Image 1 (tube, one colour):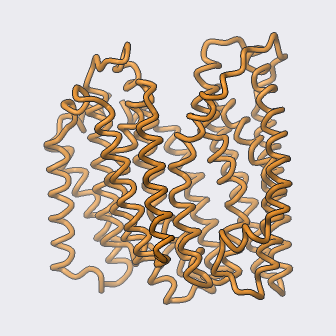
Image 2 (cartoon, one colour):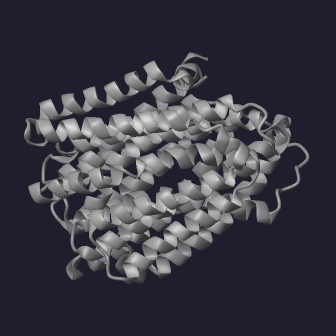
Length: 481
C-alpha cells in the first residue's frame, strides 16, 4: 500500500530534504556555532516557518476537501479570494514584524551578543519582507497538491534551497558581519522570488468561474491550530535554547535536523500516504476495516525504532559528516550530536501520534490533538519559566511533550481503533531496539572511527526493519500492497 504509492513522492521529497540538509551544512561551514550563525538561522527560516504555522497546513486541511470534485474555474475563484486575504494579512504581519524587530530579536535569539543585536533586528527586517512571498507560495503549493503535481511541489523546495545555499556561500565570503547579513537578506528575497516564478510556471491555468463559498472562520482556526502547534514546539525550544548564550540557537537547530530528517522522510510520509486508506476505513465515523490502521502504525513504529537505533549509534559520526565543516567548533559539534541523540527518542511517540492523527482527521475529531499540542507547548514554556535553557534538557522536555500528544491521540481514536493496534509488533520492535543498543554499548562503537560508526548504525537500523518484517504480517502487507 505504501511502497508503490509513495515511490515518486519519496524520491522527490528525499531530494528536497537532502538539499535542505546541505543548506544547514553550508550554514555550519560558513558560520559555525556563533552569534552570526544564530542570525543566519533565524533570518532564513522565519518566513517559511510563519507560512507553515499560519497557512500551509491550514490551507491543505481546508481547501483540499473544498476543492475536491470542483471544476477548475471554481477552484481558481476560491484560490484568488484566499490569495487576497493572505496578502492583506501578510502585509500587516510584515509591518508588525518590522516595527517590533528589536524586541522580537531579543526574544527569538537571546544569546546573540549585544554588539550583534542591531544586525539581529536588521535580519528580522529582511525576514519580514519575505513573509508575503512565503504565504503566497504556501497557497500555490496547496493548489499543486490538489492537482497532484508532486514534481512542482517538491521542485519548489529544490529551487529555494539551491538559491539559499548560494546566498550562504556569498555571506560566508563577505568581509564583515554587516555585509553577511545583507547578503543573506538579498539572497532570501531572491530565493522567495525564484520559488514564486517556479510555482507560477507549474501553476494550472484556469479562468475563474462563479466563486465558491469561502469556508467558515472556525474551520480555518481549528485547521491552523492543528497544523501550526506541532511546528511551534521545536521552534519554541530553539528560541528557549538561544537564551543559553551565543551560538546555542544554531547548535539546537543543527541537532534538530538530525531528528527532523527521519521524522519527515519516514514517519510523516507514512502517515500522509496512509491517510486515504485510513479515511476510507473510518466510513461514517466508525472503523470498518482495521487493516490500514494496523499497517500504518506497524510501518511508522518500525521505521522510528530503526531511526532511533541509527542515531544513537551513529549520531556523532553523522553530526561530523553533516556539520563538521569549515568554521564549526568541535565543542559545538559534540553538543549537536549529544542533543540530537537525546531528541531521537522523541521519534517513538511521534510515530504513534502521526498515524493516530490521521485517524482523528478521518473522523474530523482534531480537538483532542490540538489540546494535547497546546499542553506540550505549555510544558516547554513552563520549563523556560523555570530557567531551563540547556539544549539536552529541552530535547527531553520535547520528548515528554510528544509522549503526551501520542497518549492523548491514542486515547482519542476510540476503543475499537485501539484494539486494532499491533501491540505485539510494538513490543518486538521495541525489544529489538533495546537489544541493539545494549550490543552497541558492549561493543563500544561510540569510540570507533566515523566510518565504522555509520556502518554499525546502518546495519542496526536494517536489522530492526528486516527482523520485524520477518515476524510481522502487518508490516509485510503494508509494503506489499
